[in-house]
Image 1 (cartoon, rainbow, N blue to C red):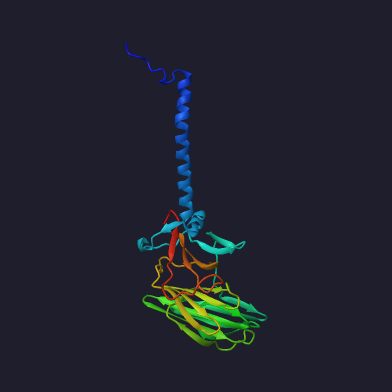
Image 2: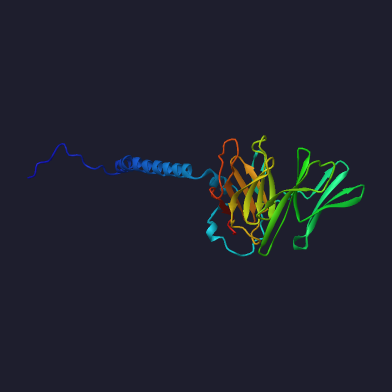
Length: 278
């Protein structure tokens, strides 16, 4: 006969078996759950905060190289600041100013594309022409008036910025700078109130103009957009510019802010975030 080992522990049976199984497997399940939770936390922490913000507006990163060359005129996204934060929606927004009332004067900018345009001033119901050109935007600053004009048609792209020193005494505008591209959107960047700059989104570029010394910087050239996918609006939030488009928003670093750094041409990557229909 074989001797029995008195110290041998037999596996429990019956109700005790279930209790033992729980004591064996429950810690492993907890470990797996903890590891899964930590993985999610680490993945969330590693995600670009801008990417998370765009996801909140239903937009996901879309590779610029894969943007299709077809017409995109619907579901336009407009960017703006609401309650101090970025807002993206489809509510129509007209960012450029082409009519401006100053006391008893009204400046009227006309843009007829390839058929030409002009800037006129109306006083007491009488209109007088001030300059020719397709007027894109009027910006009053410190008692003067900046006029942005330009045209992108076929292979031609041109633009310029003019200035009237006294907005209350209209005179023929002075040319202060020519632009290598046609302006489509103009935004006054006041991130540093003592250093105002115009951000100009062109037909194929993003440019920045120092209004005091009239120095032009090209921040982005040979842009991915075109007449088929043209910008709708632009705004600065902290150290980034956001540009609205049909179906999405482009994001690029913004220089010259309180916490941003100066950036030369094409050193700033630009990204595009699109909705699910793009």
